[in-house]
Amino acid sequence: MTIARIATNKSRLLPALFVLLSGCASIPDDVRSLPVDASIELESTPFYPPERYECGPAALTTTLVASGVDVDLDDMVDAVFLPGREGSLQIEIVAAARQHDRLPYVIDSTLAAIQGELEAGRPVLVLQNLGVAAIPRWHYAVVVGIDMEGGDVVLRSGTERRRTTPIMTFLRTWRRGDYWGIVLLRPDELPAAVDRQRYLSTITAVDETGRHETAAQAWRTAVRRWPTDTVALFGLANAEYALRNREAAVAGYRALLDVDSGHVAARNNLAWVLAEQGRIEEARKEIAQALQLNDDAELDDELRDTELRIQQMAEETR
Image 1 (cartoon, rainbow, N blue to C red):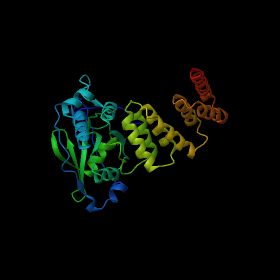
Image 2: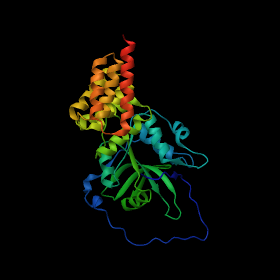
Image 3: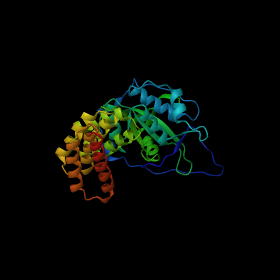
Image 4: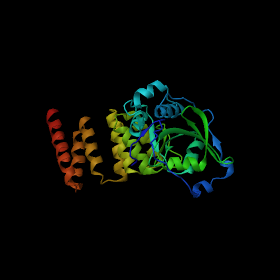
């Protein structure tokens, strides 16, 4: 997990402190492997030049609009800019993306990962340290292109619509930002190079904010990609229940149990939804099986609560 940092366009000068940088940087293997004709630039990516210190809101606005969200820079300044700190936190940028029904997916820390997203038509929001370790200068920018022949990365950066930075310079500043970079996915999209656990965790974080419709769409995307993944199946069924789509929730829990009949939490939830539908005998059967299968003491109280509630529902319907 990357430590949240404040990013601004502000340079701090410390008297009597001089840092000498020297030496040669080796070229990473993933850069060597990119052919010259791998060059790409998303020229139509919008540009929002920021006011002082507002590189975070500007970069977020750029990537949100590029993903199809109708927002303006003033909205994002209100959402993520912290005047007292003269900058924006990564956590605020991620939260704002979720509130606009996008999945902020953290990409791999390679130029090849950036290139893959660009080829998919998605600009990449990155955190750079334009200073040095002793005098950091945090800055958000948006990668919109890679010019392999010229050896440059193309950025929407600060007040520059098209800033070209040598690849090795970009990689150094990105490395000093802990290689933090995100793409904003629509819920029906997968990243170019998907890490299953990271993608599912990204959906879970959106779901936990209460954006259940967005999460449900993303869970469906995950299930299409990994049809037998129990985390994705469980997430989808839970999201359907949160949306009051009880029949879809029942179908989802049953689909999961077809894959893993010993999934106690899914069987408990299925029993609960069946009871709410008035299908008491089916609910009793499911909770009885859940209790029989359970070997997790932490789940026992929850299962007993479900069993008791089903009994109460049965008595209420007599």
